[in-house]
Image (cartoon, rainbow, N blue to C red; front, side, top):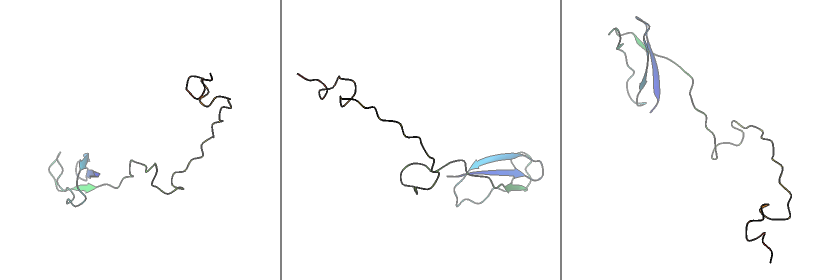
Length: 85
């Protein structure tokens, strides 16, 4: 459910309200009781990231990390692939 911001035209009181999209907008100010509450327009506070979104959306260039060159597969010598008899 989205969070809507409201401001009262009479007293200037501001509030946020968690409402369903199908709910009617609030009209009565909880601070002064007058019917002058207006819904404010505000920017969304989230970004869509991760797999499943378009490749070009919010794309940033990341520096590639150089791979370690080593004779052993794990580069530690502790795994069974590194141990030689």
